[in-house]
Image (tube, rainbow, N blue to C red):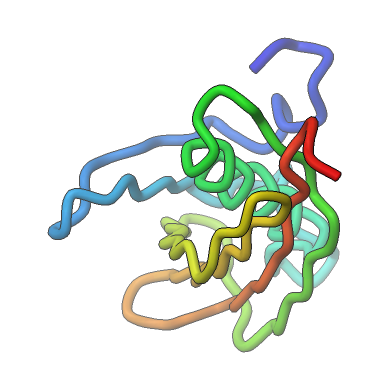
Length: 125
């Protein structure tokens, strides 16, 4: 992503193949990502989730592209400096106009955030 992108301040982001061939994205928590209590700021987690779930939605529609319609998150546990936070995505449903994507953000063996989102397919009414 370009320097002007808000997502440029999220990373660096890493990606790898998961056991089922899926792409798993991650970042290592540093002092830019945390609040005064030393826990990852919720806004950071939502920005990361939006970028990664958006990537999954865009792959699902190939050349058309899509944009965020809505996103809901549940914050389950805090991640801290030094943690590797991974995002696992799932396309739940796909229509001509809307993509339903869910995600789990994990630190170690723990789910720290779960996310559900809707994505508008560009050019579809």
